[in-house]
Length: 139
Image (cartoon, rainbow, N blue to C red; front, side):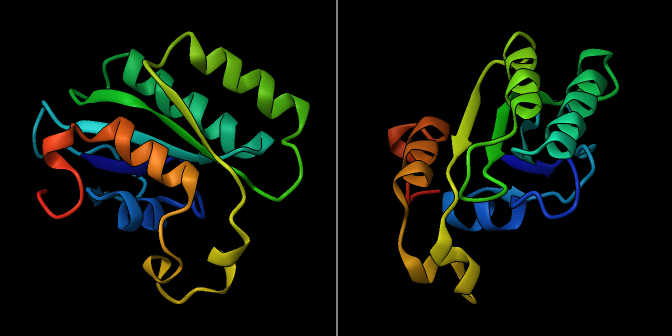
């Protein structure tokens, strides 16, 4: 599984560290055409707009990767702005899956995200991404 950030600060490194897989930065992987990719964005107007652009690249065939879905990471502890929610609805029609990760205050103070354990949203994402045989310790 490749995690691709739709923009800087999306949370790709943290997600990859907690869920497993490889953080590929902000570029589509070109190493293998069958790469499974999950896009990561912040649930903000700009973050989701960047995700719309990345999904549009995928839809136009700019990459041979398989898009497994999009993760929208909360940009703050507050509810996302309406425009971000509307854009996520648009993405729902283009992407196989949309996952939401709530704001996790403990991550803002952690040097290593694994120090805080696995928050419920991250655990749900992990279970959705990896089949039972590929979960923690067997990847």
